[in-house]
Length: 474
Image (cartoon, rainbow, N blue to C red; front, side, top):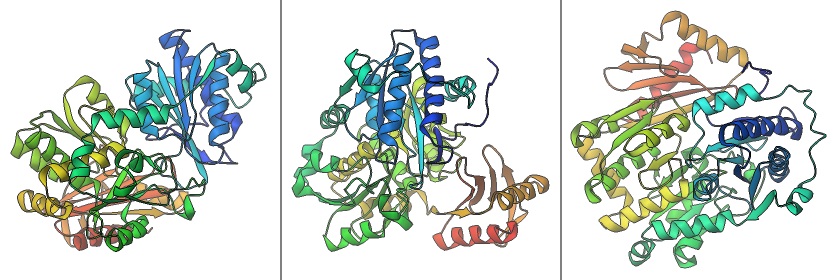
């Protein structure tokens, strides 16, 4: 099918745009119409979808618009009755037997953004070929939706059914996790919902005696901070963990599919180490086997572990949609990315910041060790792997100029005094040195260059990034 329009494009996970500019209910209707066309043609006219949203501006209105477009094509929907985490919609898509799921969210992006994520029938991010098909169906900006009736009328007709998706999901987590073990170990945590869709869930799971909640009100502006659980955004979490004498801190992004953590000392524990710890727990303690799947920007520690433990390690482009397919086609133990998105065997083939956070607590309880002790033991066994990332906000022109420099020169020849020994271009420009690596990659949704480095010390990794910024003139 030829592309009828190219002004709306999906990025690493969904379509995202600025509210009041490209993100409008008119454009949401166009994307919803394309999704409805794909669902109807692929799965038949009797299909169901499940639809939810996070607290962002236009969230509920965009979700209602999506439900109406689906109904206008004869597709019925389950409509989440509350602000709902993305992993809850992913889980419900499979659990309810739906052909697809839709979440109105821009995930970790700044508050002025909103978006449109699509979930496959299997309970994970729609695969790249699915997204390509949907993109090709997006109608032109002149699309006329006057044939679509009101949300209330479709509810009356039974085409849209309200459903307690969040509550169903929380009940599922209660069955999947050993919450009694966590409580018996007297683990007490701080949960930072970052004003997003994950608010209150850890308290529901563990009880108020075990959880201190911060930033737990719903706020479409996320308190003025992008709802991304990276170290620079979690100073409040770190401080509360130590002041409350808690065992750990857990943060989730705006739609709760990503995770960031602090140990009992308030020290940030990045997703690289969480991935490695989960490999240990699931393989060594639970006796499970399977592949380790990681994205291009994720730690080499997983490669060292894979070789030591006899587990295959696979590397994908950046974006969880590339990882999800491996969960469907193969035997995956753990899959994840550096930005806090992690999935494990036995759950949905999708990022779930709530489930992963609780699973780390279960691991701490099972091993009867502090999170700092687990991280230190990991580094002692597999060597130091420290990480630094800079999201360099710049102009479109400067971004393109830097990428042209890298493309024309075949990458940088030397970084921070170390000779570059090889260049990998699976997704961006990844320079390998004798010790560590540096990756330069453009954001798919913002005028941002992401620069990542891994080395034996954080200081070395940061120095690598700063030298790349200098050489690229950004």
